[in-house]
Length: 231
Image (cartoon, rainbow, N blue to C red; front, top):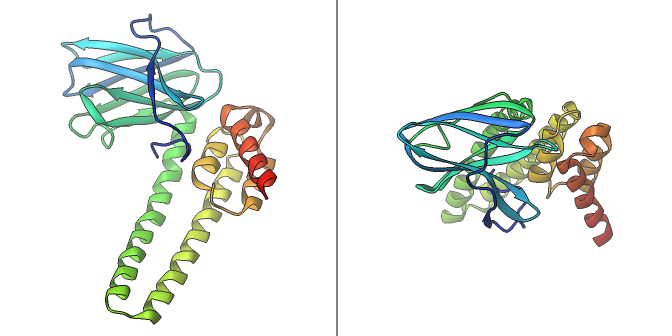
């Protein structure tokens, strides 16, 4: 889930290198095996991926980065020397701790201190099971096509569609259960954008007042509005 929305243009604009590391969110961390180079704290501003803080390491792997968080949102830790990986996490006010190690920067990451991140981890654990099952169906369809087995192909396609429906329902129910957390509209935006508009509407209408006014709450409402206008 490295993209916030499919249409986002991934650009990088560094605006605050070398600033003092003060803010409503402090990110303290350690990346084992990385002691020399620059770590960036980034987030999306409109469609631009912006660096809001950075730190140059020279001899030790501990770091502190910061930003003023107006509304909980997705941030990224990126390293110039590791260009093909980053650590995605849900940032919010307070102190967040991130540890990882090279060479598996992304997959070794452990994040604590963010309630929205805890919920996102919980969701992704279940979502990965749906995704793995979908990969199985893709393999089965390939074999059915190769063997010209139309009956098996139709059965597999039907099963795949049922799986997709179950995933959408699980996602919507997860968002409804956690309607007081900013992760709810974020998950709706990133996982339900192809779902029935009724599911999106149900999630949107259930959000608490504070979450509805959050970054992703506003984006979800605007996204639904565009769909309805196009219908």
